[in-house]
Length: 285
Image 1 (tube, rainbow, N blue to C red):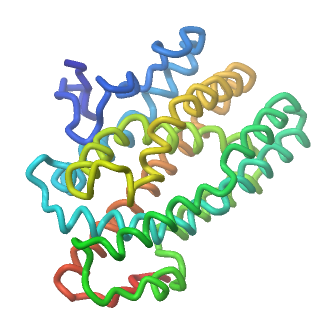
Image 2 (cartoon, rainbow, N blue to C red):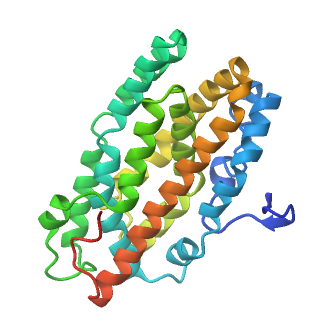
């Protein structure tokens, strides 16, 4: 069994949320895909973001949600919230990466700029999968009767989604736009680290045919290649600009904390939906 160390340095068992045995991504070392990425600076980066990664992978609410004996209705409600509100975070991704590429080229990182602009095209239209998933989940027998899906789509972004958008704007428009690579690396790595466990739960609680969770299923497969790409770009940045290690660790950590905030806000809303304690439009700011 893969061993992880918590923030105290003590060994801990592989997290229930993650699935490193499926993807080889649980430790995030990159040895499986790109041995050349193991520079001293990259290893230091990995060590720096480990606490934030484990905060996601060990989160008790997510572990309970995805457990074999989890509540099917809660998982369904969470997937619906994730799909609806995730549109606000997914639709701009192509533009974020492309703009980061432009700004990297402007500060002399021409190769990185070209790589990011080319990579951006692979993110086009992914929000449509979330929209399709949400529409299916809203009509699924496990769904809550009377849900106003159009009201959910029309609602402003959740507070956590706004934090995520702000993170990208701060990074792309700042003086070090290559921080976008750390964001992409951590978020797309999550698809390979915890995505398989989400996929297993979706098949168990929603159905085996992929309807209602196409976004998750697609990204579990797609983001393995994307994670390798992002790891390579991040290694290049760290090699060329080792003094930015602390900045890149901080950016990757902020990305993970922000995304965890989104996952847990969706979970809170899903619980409220099941008890009728919250308007279906959800919380925003």
